[in-house]
Length: 398
Image (cartoon, rainbow, N blue to C red):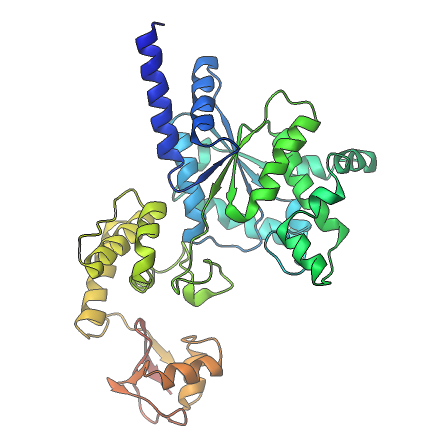
């Protein structure tokens, strides 16, 4: 190979590395090390093994999860091997990352049940058929006590206590279970078991991900994985990270298209560029009207996960209902048991509690047959169309 060709290849791999790592942090030596990994793979004709661990603590995924999934897809498109590790063992311990208290462990049955829907949802982004799917229970559950003692000797308590969450909990006198110390060790050993070249995780996973490099060295592997950390995205409130713990601010992959579109339209303007960068392949245009850009974002994301027809319908309904103050065409008819407005809002799942119902009424977010309800003592005595917030409607009958 002549020098000119070699230089062109180096430029190609650097360009690929920059594209893949857009918005992410690459450790320990940045995008240049990723480019070297890609180049070494090319010359050795060995696809990189790209690892992502999944502890199925909940049965569904949200747009925040797709940030890393889209990165995995880029590796797949370049011919590399994606390795998805279901945390059959680690989920039973519970990842303490970012937690202020010990997280309840899941049973083997809960892990299996939650994992069922994961891959169906992930297939919206990556080719599951080409992914290597492993369960870390296959090697961690078969370890002897002596094996675990050996694994424990790969680090020190002093190093484990440098983790922000452990250090903070210790300083505040909050309990830390010794079992939690094993989580980063177990996750690190996964990298040995699957011979990982790259491991993905969120920015809250820094300690665990770097531990994988130490464990690989401890067990004598002649390579260390590089770490790619993807940002956590905020939910629609623009404050808390997207999580099913806050369903009103979370956009699930199983969301109805019109709800997905509507929630995306409700994000703060300041979040738009981040959403464009991490969730789509289209560029954010700062010169455009913010409302138009947000509609472009909402349409693109809804189309990605529900198809063009569903995105068209969702956009048309949003224009009709929100912009033109119209009413949806497909309002569900529901029989309710109470006539008190607060009870009805809870019964329809428009809100999660009476307290939330009171705040919605007080904020002017409830209408009945187009008339705003402002009194929390209101009772309804006739059938009609109830609206809660901007996107929830029901044709109620008693």
